[in-house]
Image (cartoon, rainbow, N blue to C red):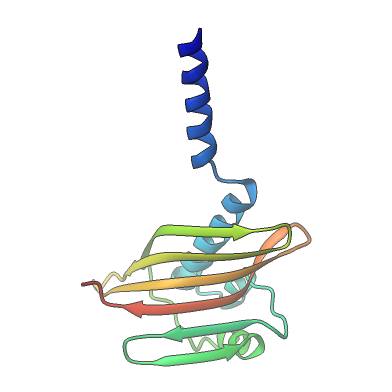
Length: 150
């Protein structure tokens, strides 16, 4: 009996430690869908739909050859004017998610690898600030930092 109880408790603790909350699952889905949309969707305003544009919305990018910073309105205008053309059918893979969320705000860090059909590979460390708007998680801030793995 003691062995059965100990086994049950160990199993329960293991499941709890690896379980994602409902919010964490929803947040991750939004991030992955937003990234896939950026690389495959010709309709940039549909991509903007994953965002909540506010006076405090920011987008940062530091690449190997460029650095950009945009406020929400600037970023939205660049999307509307197709300043960032999609890399047709690029494949994104995500890893090392760290998600910290409360009822209305969340911050998320993760690693991303993007491969274009031409074979160009980009590795990035990424951050998303998120806000829950009417029960739906929206991105309010992004920070993307390209790197070359060692």
